[in-house]
Amino acid sequence: MKRRDFLKKSARGLAGAAGAATLATTSTITAPAHAKGRTSWICVSAFGKAGMLGQAITHFAEFVNQASAGRMKIKVYHGSELVGPFEAMDAVQSGTAQMGFGAPYYWAGKSEAISFVAAMPYGLTAQEQNAWAYYGGGIEIADKLVYNPLGLKFLPMGNTGNQMGGWYKNEINTTDDLNGLKFRMPGLGGEILKTFGVNVVLLPGPEVLPALTSGAIDGTEWIGPAADLGKGMFRVVQNYYYPGWHEPATILDGFFDLKEWEKLDKDLKEIVIKGAAATNLFLLSRFQAANNAAMQKLITDHQVKLRKYSDELLKAIGERATTVLPELAKRTPEATELFNHLVSFRTTMTEWSGYSEGSFIESRLSAKFKPI
Image (tube, rainbow, N blue to C red):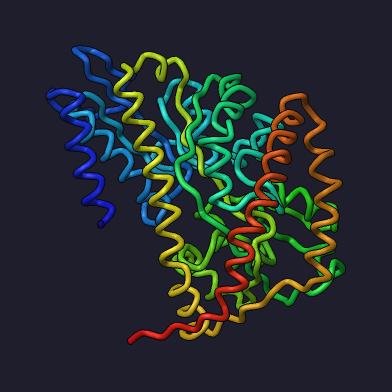
């Protein structure tokens, strides 16, 4: 079933439960409206409008608007339309907006623990992250330790899946090749690279390609083939590395003004929760469906050189991760508790995933199907 059709049908079904009402409209930026049972929210995104991430938040807002039968309208402002990409959380905390959309590690300056919500190097796959979030207490502990103390409510609102390692001007074979490199990598992966002498740079999406083109950075990670193809990094550099050890999967966060969240009727909260979960699923699925075709296009049409990180490099970075990440987690009690929670869950997932998907993926190579 097409995603838009699913959203429309879901919206009609939820609308019956929500009841009929007229659609709230906002032509200017205003405070949230709750008059006559209607709510109008402003959402600020850290991402541009055109890409998959921008489209995802637009579809989420459409779903909530329709599913609530006009009782709740969310107006989306994409990155830099109202505030800068990295100012989205500030806007929600200040009351300029009631909702934001981004990646948890974009807000690392606000919490020592928040980057662990996004992705942990050598950590969980997307399926394992979803298991942690929805059935492993992940949403609850993220709220308790990170978002609620910031005056916010958290919901996962997308996942990139396993990312690529990144784009480099020159080949990278050993840890010596990392020393002195100017590389764009947010999150905990960047903290690990710093210990190898990398000058880690944090840039919002729209600034990445210009920085790469000008030589301000020597390389960058972004997401994966489908998103990277659209970004056009192949126009500047050709060495494209895998796997994405730094982000085996990445949660994107929807964060809501906690006071405004608590004002919502129970059924409106449920619509937002279900809409966020659907966005989480659809965005991950879209990346998965598009990545291989995009990869082939990069290789065939744009002569990109696909390279695997050396075993020596992956082992060295992995070993460094086991010392750097605990040290980062020790900075605050909240970060320590979240780290321990994730590591404990990772232990159960490593065992089960090894028996199930790990063994299956290896054995699947023996069945060479062809179209008939």
